[in-house]
Image (cartoon, rainbow, N blue to C red; front, side, top):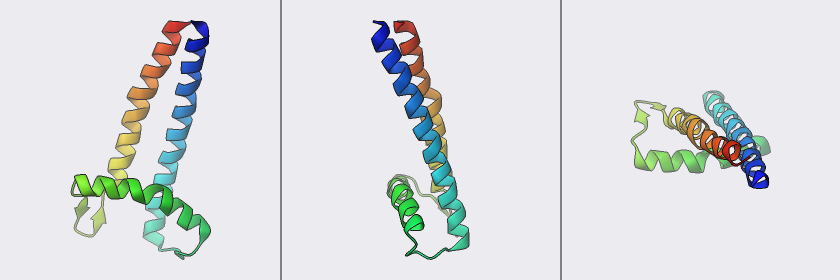
Amino acid sequence: MFVAGDFLGAVAYVLDKLLDLYMWVVIVRALLSWVRPDPRNPIVRFINGLVDPVAYRISRIIPTRIGMVDISPLILIALIWLARSFVVAVLADVGTRLR
């Protein structure tokens, strides 16, 4: 069973790092919305392609517009934090118990 425990530990570690990276991408996207960069820039298009579909789904479920401010990035960061705190911790704990 130690192989399954090590595998779950590795999955938890990789998931934690991916969620951390995605959280930083969301923060960069929010900062880019203040600057209004060139929308044809490939880096801007890539970041928008990663964040906008998820933020749009959040906006469809919860009204996220407060005047001119869209709080969907804040909600997305909170969901990422929740996933890191709960899902990753549970996977790491199960992996530790299987060792």
